[in-house]
Amino acid sequence: MKFTIPLLFTLIIYVPMANAQKDRAELILKNGAKLEGYAVLKSLDKIKFRKQKKADKEFYTFDKVDTLKIYDDFEPKLYIQAKVKDEEKPKVLKIVDIGKNLIYYRKISQGYGAPAFMPGGNMPMTVGGFYNVTNSYVRKPDEDEVTYLASTNWLSGNFKNAASEYFADCPNLVAKIKNRELKKKHLKEIITYYNSKCE
Image 1 (cartoon, rainbow, N blue to C red):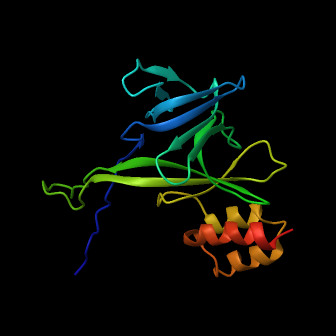
Image 2 (cartoon, rainbow, N blue to C red):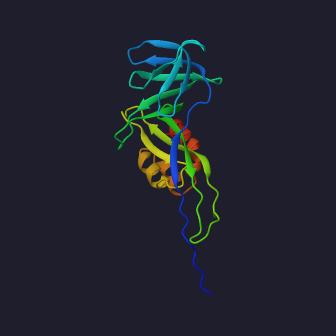
Image 3 (cartoon, helix red, strand yellow):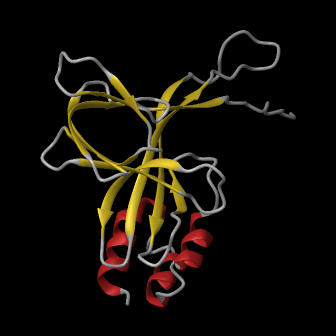
């Protein structure tokens, strides 16, 4: 008996995530001025800012803001705008870790997978819904641009090749990546290794 497996298509729409509440924040402007108050990072990378909780809202973009600090935890979350290698438009990224040899950035967005249907049927074969997509970027101290390295999106490129090329100045780390001792899911360990054991 011959079986035919239909192709299932999933529509993916990316919607940048925003902070759900107003948190204590500090804006460091590119002219050196500092503003303290409460801020929300909006979906289009705009900052909604109030000097007091009930004060009139003001809007800022990263054309004027150098660093956004949001104090919603023990350590402030730092956001900057950076030029990404091989991309025309800069991105607003969260600084995750500043190491001796490498700075690690992230951008978290939401993807949406639409339900996929069988040809000629009316029942979905997969359930649609929103899910988080984390894109990771890195920059060495002598680099002017950040480099895209990995994504949790299943459509992302070959991590082993990209990571081996970027970390080519550390042969021991590249060997661990190529023999799959360290994979994309070990990105934190890879960055820690590079910062602590590579010269």
